[in-house]
Amino acid sequence: MAGRVDNSGEIESEVIARRAVRGPAGRGPPLFRKSNSSPEQRFATAWNRATDAEAAALGAVQAEFDAAIDTIAGILRSWGQTRLGLEQLDSPAFPAACEGWAKHVLIGSPYPGQPEEDLPARGVSREWSRLHRFAAERYEQEHEAVGAALADLRQVIWAFVEGLGGVLATDTETDDQLLARLRRLRGVVDGGSTEELKRAVLATVADVTSIIEQRDTARHTRLDELGQRLTSLATELQEDQSEGQLDSLTRLSNQAALNEHLARASNLQHLFGRTASLLRLDVDHFGWINDTYGRLAGDQVLTELAACLVRAFPRRSDCVARLGGDEFAVVLADTPLADAGRLAERFLQTARDLGISHRDETIRITMSAGVSDSTRGEPVEDWTARAGLALGLAKQAGGDRVAQAPAGLDVRAAALQGRRGGP
Image: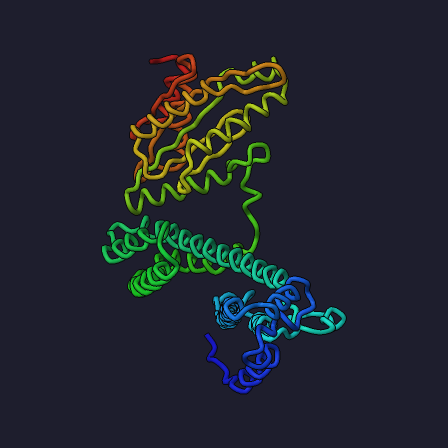
């Protein structure tokens, strides 16, 4: 934060100006008497006709008004000296605007950017609505900029953790120092403050740098690739990728976003042993709904189911996606298989209770679900295939049910057996 400038001369001039506005002591509230606005004229008239007791009360109101004016001006000046550390907000124009508004509030000088033709002919006129708009617009800018900066920071940290997961996967020996540091970093990634994130990242980078110096050439190559990825990420974060990761009909995550979330969950399983579960859900007899009620009705069913899924699985750490057609998927972070199965059963009941009004009819639906949990060292493709196999078993059994594919299931053998008609 820049140091304060000695503005004692300006303050002295400002005090003299305020005395000129207020008038000599003992003559009543001249601030109101000088204004041409009708409420202030009424105040001046009341003052002139007031008894001593009434005059004392009106003087107290004037004192409160002056104190409020001083406070507002002080807040504006403090706000103008605040630095957020964000290049797009920390320009010299904002402190100057705050100072201009402070003087406008204190002595009625022109507000920043006020045209000369808008200046009052006489008296003091304060533009409170313009000041409110100035503050509201600035607050909105700060809110958006800080939110974007925090989102960028967390995405960089996730990329860092994912890259380190790939480095560790090539080592036969686990580096205890690095794992301990990563566990501490994990504790602040999802919910820590910005300062905690900063300290955790800087400490982790220092430890990683020390470890890199002790690695062989192959390990150095992998970490150099990670460094290049983090460098390029700063440019990639400027692009709005969210729209490209949304399903156009339901506004849920699409297949690309789901794949990214699955890879992240798999990395967390590898690094920290955090089990995640995958639900794959399908609308029973959806083709019949399209044939009977039309494609518009089918789209309505999908959009209302999407809204139900978002309400049923609201955690920010989870991912709700549409895979295409009438199939959906949900990734549940830190959720073992048994709990995921119960959550799937509960949602299937929600689907049964859902009555979708279309024209003069109510469409009733049921769904089937397959559930699998992540396993250390298992490829993401096998994890998703187990959930798909479980969904197929639920459909073969008549639908409207949940089937589970536990860890360790040989998906290739199970799929081959299913094609042969085996149990």
